[in-house]
Length: 97
Picture 1 (cartoon, helix red, strand yellow):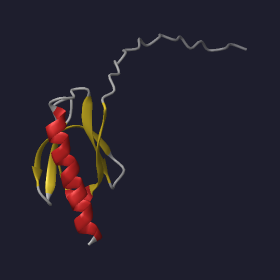
Picture 2 (cartoon, helix red, strand yellow):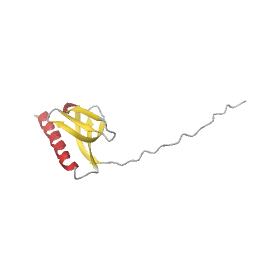
Picture 3 (cartoon, one colour):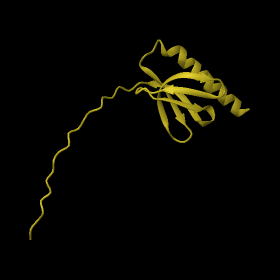
Picture 4 (cartoon, rainbow, N blue to C red):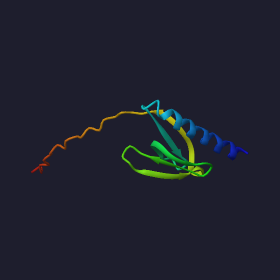
């Protein structure tokens, strides 16, 4: 019974996320897996009580069975700019004693 309720809740969250994603572009779905991984993106397909397909910002598409998923949430999208750091050249001088 608990497993059925859990699958119902996950399905409900996914469906709700699909309807609200058009109106709120600054949110993203976040899939928390039982193995500890966290996937950010847009859920592009759901097979009820079986699997989801999520696409990340970089275009990768991942498919997960519902039994692999801990929870699915909709969170505010973080807009973090990647900054390229320049490597400093460091000369290592050998000490002569």
